[in-house]
Image 1 (cartoon, one colour):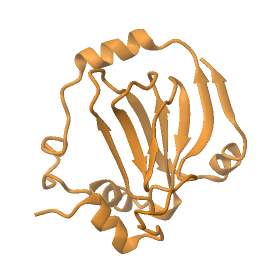
Image 2 (cartoon, rainbow, N blue to C red):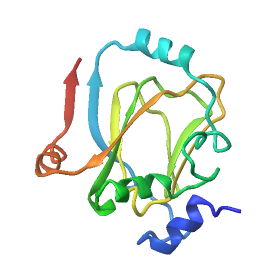
Image 3 (cartoon, one colour):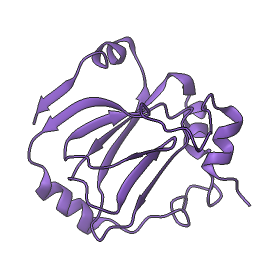
Image 4 (tube, rainbow, N blue to C red):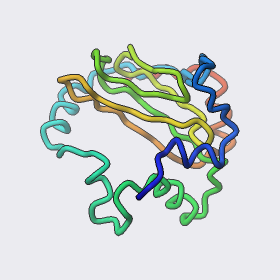
Length: 160
């Protein structure tokens, strides 16, 4: 039996894990991409197969429900997990029933092109889509460089 992301994070995190305390600063808004990519998103959605916890590790050799796989992959590649950043780009406007959760802060009502990050090493996080609409999102994970740190000090607004 695997342990949940929340249980695993509690052991190695600086997060408070107080369900009665309201988090208001869990998400760092970075900026916005402006452009038209809906045709490409529609094609990706049409080509996609359903993905969930029971099948996301198929073909990887990792056990189903392995919540540490991504961190292990980073360590195996020689990256310091404390120097890794995860950036999300929302590819379509939010629909009721779609959400991300960072700590105990619900993140919703995004617009296509919104860019954000969060302290993924410490904040327990989750996502769900209970809507009738796919929720495409680009997740970029990589090692922070000095250039990355400088870029993150200002709003990112890019016309595509």
